[in-house]
Length: 217
Image 1 (cartoon, helix red, strand yellow):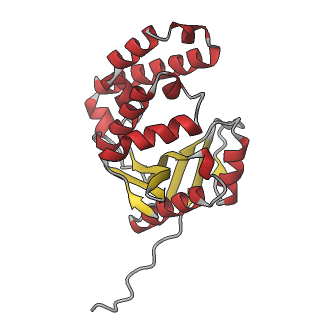
Image 2 (tube, rainbow, N blue to C red):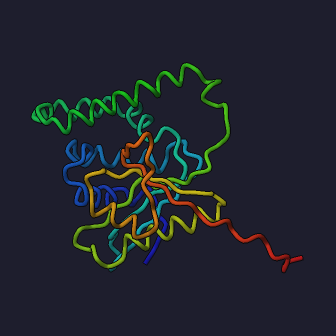
Image 3 (cartoon, rainbow, N blue to C red):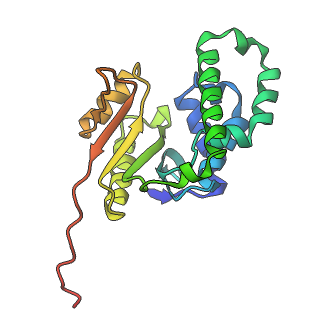
């Protein structure tokens, strides 16, 4: 059964994230960090948040958070920097992990760019709003995979994007996650290549919603 996710579901969301992504940076920093990550995306100052889950026997089996997000990663890093530093302090072995350190450096760069933009509010607010509806996160409990839950969640997000009259969708996937890439390509997502290089961004063009037929006139 597909349901809208609420704040009280955040522990279940965190649990599935940790099961689905056991080596991710957030998972390795602990359940509290994962919970705060998703709370930021459910409650942060984002223009559009669409959070749904598939429940099997009244238990969350998979979730998808999509929409238009304001400083999705940098805002989380800024708001929770003390928690993140503390969690790294009590897990000192992580500083010897090259993959984890790469994620930390990436996060620091994102946070620095975020701070620079905050010093130039006029530039930050100029320009047109995005026309892309993003998939921020999607995960399925490994014990529930193969049941079509991921496709159901993606179709729900796409349907919402079309209803809101977006012209395309976007997501970012680890280029080494070949099974996820095949899954998205099966749903007609394509890799967005720039300068002959692909860094994990995938996009999908959406059909234009049919105009009202005038039946209600």
